[in-house]
Length: 405
Image 1 (cartoon, helix red, strand yellow):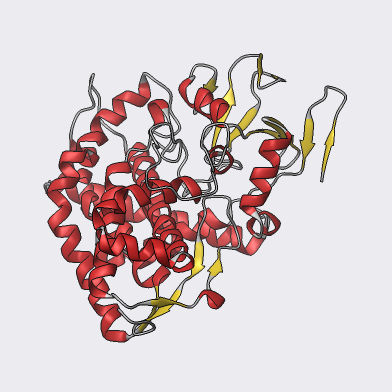
Image 2 (spheres, rainbow, N blue to C red; image 1 turned 45 degrees about the horizontal axis):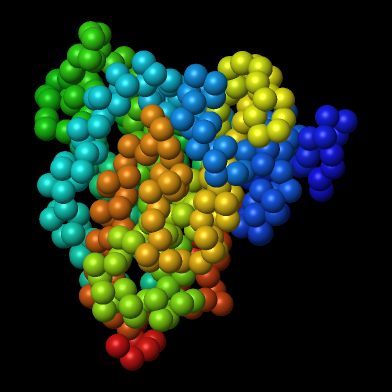
């Protein structure tokens, strides 16, 4: 329900974590964008919802007016505290990005590509042997987490436990259920213990991995990363690494099942898979949006913001803005996505975008190669009950031999 207040501001009960939103997310954000470039939600103690592409990009660029220091989520995530470097502004933000960037740079990910391909090939080959599977737990949720844990040097064989704990925290951000809150608190305690154990192990015996760097090396400009900061950094990497790439893969697979002509084109022209990936992350935002705190009174998008206000940059709405993208609801392999905000914008542009693009490309290449006649059961496909963190699927069941190759 929406209304206009005395200041001519559109007021709505926009709740991106609600089941109502999850059931109609794309239509909801498209309608809200056309109603108001900046609206006011009365959920979670009140926040601004920024929907238009140009305004979202401007806010992401202007970190002096729209600060990340209060966190990137509404409400705040239950895991970690500072979420380094996501919840930092320059110059502190750059200090930690300089530590992390070499591990996620294009050249570093390129060196990992043979191992990533081998890992994904083994997973996809198992699907072919089984004949039936679910793309969410059997592939999409495995690869990104395994790669992120490997870069950190943490035990990939415990990936399932990490994933389950992180998923509960992300999917239940808005919960007031006491049992869920208690379970999430236990999850956080367990995750912190695992991270600190790994850090202590690296101080005793450093290895060639990111955890060793975090545990032992000096920061640019001096000083060491504290245990609390290590926890925050690892939490961010795990949060980002698990759900966004998983969501993009399943969105791609379901979209191709609904558009078989595009699927056949990509099979015949695998060099166009990267173009399809850029369009998929634009159409089906792996991150629904990012929060910022207003640092000064200012006019923005036709409304008056006040210092201390929280604002949610609704990437899902901006990515389908017809003012920026012609025929925004269509997948166009020839579209220029140089202005896409799907991977963020400005100083906080996604640290792992090269990893995400590489993993998604390899996954699609190997699905086409090793599962040439797979078929997704669209009637049994289930979207996530919450779209607050991104466009995610709970289940994408599939089988082999469902169509002629």
